Length: 68
Image (cartoon, rainbow, N blue to C red; front, top):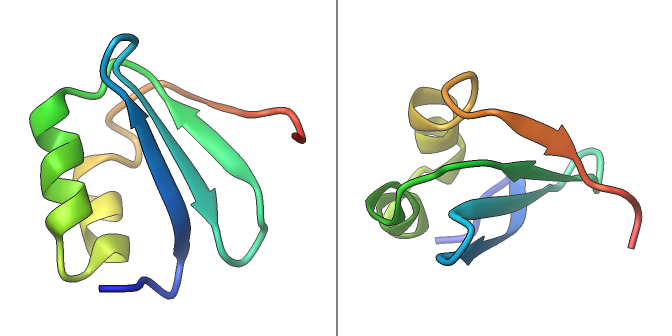
């Protein structure tokens, strides 16, 4: 299901880094130490914005990624 707030998400299982690009700002944030099962649930969530707010936002350290 496409999301109105999450444009793209990618996950690196080796570093447990979840990268999320947001629709409104176009910016990418990298979230550290995200377990693989959380990413899998996020990916399959019907309401990705709700899942993000409930289970990722304010629960994992993050940084704003540099422009690519």
